[in-house]
Length: 504
Image (cartoon, rainbow, N blue to C red; front, side, top):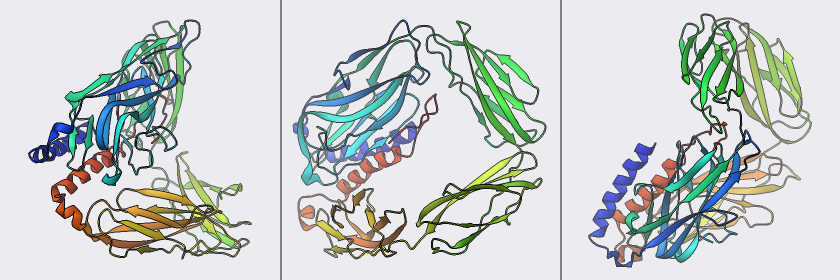
């Protein structure tokens, strides 16, 4: 992912170089990026103590990044940070909400996090350049961390591929070399603590007689190092090694409890058991009659097309999402929902080898609302305010209440407007020309969770003043590339050593 990000950034820099031939960079000034602990505003903090071990979940702390110095007409930024991921774990990276002193207050923005081992990138872009801000001190972004290992560590800003600021309609750039940087030092104290066991395996769904690689490299010791990995593969085979990676072959299909025990340099231990299934799990297929369904209707759930490639299905575990669960040997079952709503149904199948597979689907009980919207002007131009009106949407059932309107504008902006009390009216500005049309989608939700969507293509032409001001294809491409960097970054997430998912 880092290579992809660098490649896109290289393309961005190439376009910027072309723009530099036309744009005066005299407005760029030296600025400072400060990294501080959020509650104390210090750039050096101490966590933990000498009498207590580090908790298994780590010691949490929050970092904020402050921009100081003057940046004129700031339109977008990207900031990269790096840290020792074996000791410091990033659990979240975000841009604060608009009720803070965030420097993009009241503006439309995008946010993303490019999460890798020890690397976090976060950025934002103002879609409407007329809303660009001049700042002299302000909060850019926030990051959540946990400290997991005794010692002294730093969180740093890193290279020019991942830190930049764009400003002005001509897209002047504040160069990385012009940015002074202040990093954060973390001193983690701890009494003796046991290690923490963690492992993965590949392939995730192995067959019998296939070589499986078990990887325990995410195991760690808060105050030392792991000296031994003891494996019990659940089939009578065991192995003790100093290496974190090992291979194993199961000669028969089935379900195995794999137990890893790690031993640290203080002879303290920790164990983790995970289930590994080998062989072909059953294939789940479920059929329902066509909705709509009303409360009180008897619905047949039909899983008779499900099958096991190398054996037979021995049990069907039904979860209807309304608190009713049932295990049977039959492939069909009838069920009645008493109340209106959207229910998440799940079916789990177990075969004669103990292997299982599951599927889920949404079951709507009641008629969903009908989404509908109009917009004005009908032939908008770039940077022109377009008013969208969802008041033509209708309720599905008498007595139902609309909860919210969710708009996807086709330009990476998604906005939810609750109802009540907010109006079904919303304004939006398209930043670049698209004569083929932006695919705008409205989804209407009612209070019972039922929903419906509708879409329309909205062609947007270039504004005359945009052409006169010299903003043409090159600048539009630059905007697209900046947004693309942030968009590509959002698809990558890394789970921490404790399997905590990054929150965006």
